[in-house]
Length: 328
Ligand SMILES: O=C(O)CCC(=O)C(=O)O
Ligand SMILES: [Fe+2]
Image 1 (cartoon, protein in one colour):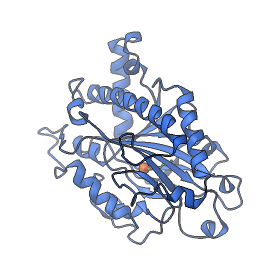
Image 2 (cartoon, helix red, strand yellow):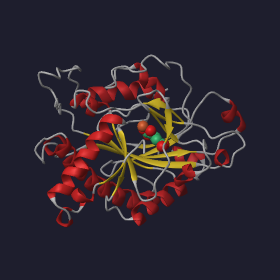
Image 3 (tube, helix red, strand yellow):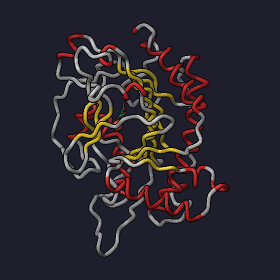
Image 4 (cartoon, helix red, strand yellow):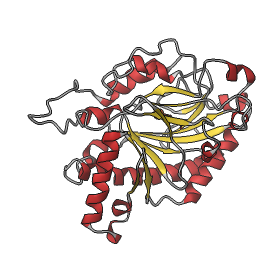
């Protein structure tokens, strides 16, 4: 398996597992994050109904008219109120030109990239801007469940990096900087299909862990389009969804914090081939972006053999640079 499946139940349900099981999961996690920067996470304990309810509500919202959806637009992608942004607002591969945690592996690639073929809704439970009624309950339930899973991932990470079990808590409390994004890729028109635009251009995520619920339709025929991850070899690997699991990857700040031991890996969402069933269908994926509160800076994995590779960076400043580059 190029992308490992990691069962996190020793951390999600600690009473049922012993320390040896936790140590094994932590070693597997360290290997996955160092080699690929992506893993498939099982054993998280999130009920399928919680995921299903949010997916249905999101479809209901995105199938509304452009005018109805525009009523929930509160500014550019990444604005503090969250809400809706349509196609034409974001070109994520333009962030490749800003300094990332990836050591500039493909910097300078795409200053003029066309906008991504995606609509977004960012759900923020504490936002004063009202969310559509259909999303409110399922998104709140999903949000709090994923915060719980994030806590497990932090314990797993602390074990993997030989840090105290509660190491990450202080950087993520009293509030983490999280963002629940519904990413809707409409069926492709003939002109979109013919254009050089992609569904979501190549990029690294910006801060901490991203927990992604993939669209099961990505299981379609080989090359049907969907999430692809750039391996160290330069090869693009298509990530097939695994039922009941989340895909988890790290963003730039983790690469900085681990002094390059873990990889903030470049990924993208391609278009399905013209005329295929997948091209005529919408695709919905749900990334939950997570990062520390702004003051956090956590250089680890530094010793005599591993001198610091990165300038220290504050979460807020890094996020600001990335978002301003991605907005069209
Ligand atoms: O839609 C996907 O599968 C991935 C989206 C993504 O990479 C992102 O939102 O950062
Ligand atoms: Fe991403």
